[in-house]
Image (cartoon, rainbow, N blue to C red; front, side):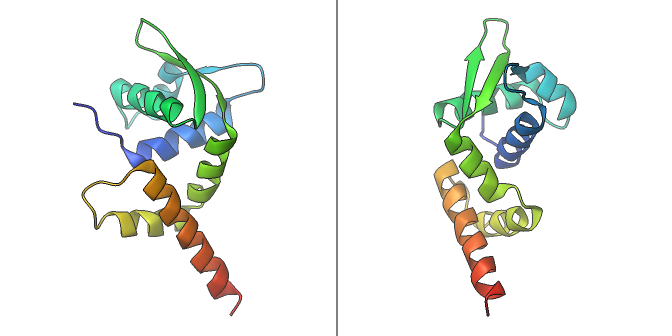
Length: 123
């Protein structure tokens, strides 16, 4: 069965941001080579779900690969909320108390973590 791995979501978005260029796509196979701790199926499934969520624009091919063309504005907003390692660790710590959470919950928790860090820095 396929499970959406939040760490893989973050890693795929970070990889796409680093390796995409304006007029060239990147393949899920290339991402999997760089992110070898994940299986090909994990990367492909993550791309599929990120596309469905509107975080990336990608094409999916019969040979079992995906071609990411771009990160959408929503994808950039999501990535900006989870990019910082400190924010990500705190977000993951909070989410670890639950058996499952959706990407929208991950985004909301990360946003709250960032807000709390900002509020505490103003004191």
